[in-house]
Length: 383
Image 1 (cartoon, rainbow, N blue to C red):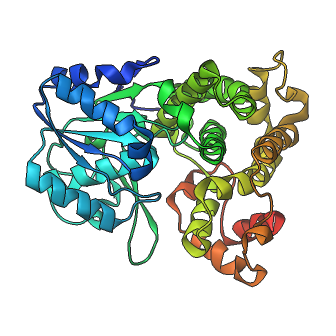
Image 2: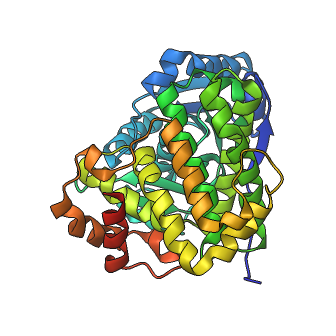
């Protein structure tokens, strides 16, 4: 049994139309002035306005920063910080996808502790307490609502920085599946495959423990069952709820055990070629499952035992090959690319990508040895 230290820091509030309780929840935290961090797409969908209306109904002064984009950079955090300094909020709400939630955390780091985002790369770099925060995810993917890490890209180098501190955990995660009904099909696919990767990587990471495994298993049950359903019927609210809860639990698994080689391989593809994170994950995950399965196949079979008698899930007897095939089939149904060459990746650049992949922190938690040679081998398989 691997030792662990787990203290639940995030209250999870789940249910359709629970966004209308946002003002009451903010009031419970003693906030009278709030900064809402969102993005233009979520604003256009009406979700941000609905959240702001709930806050204002509770008598809370509310200000909006909607300058978030996908894969937020240090520049976006700095822009949000300027708004925070102007209005001096007592609480921050991250309303949107993982980018909005990560940007909210980044703003909080700098507003309360000063400096630059680069100063917080790593773990536990914040010396002062941070403002309380509420997460309102509108996608089912990153699980950022239950993690203490913010993923922010350096605006100059484009390198993703993992900035983690327990003080950066959201006090409340407000999960309203109704908000995910407006996701475009592409967003559903990209975030869904990312959430599934979180489940499968946390289950076999070097830091896996009794707490993380419990969340990984439950996330697998929810995501594996509901992903295909939301692809078939985007308006299936029960399936949307299953995806949202699965992504949330996978986030809790990450918080307790970290990720692996799939994410280490995906980040350089985004940095060098601008490949969307979910696409990169979808291409690399089946190959990593087979790669790890050569030495840790029993762990994957244990996970498949949880769904052994459930229709649609791979058989435990098929092991890592069956699981990899299941993931590849889901990615194909989601219309995600399966080969790097179809995304403009050049074979001659694979060695450079492999070198960068070995510098990614998540790769150090992969159960099987993961160095430049192994990274290159996996890129070649996906090419």
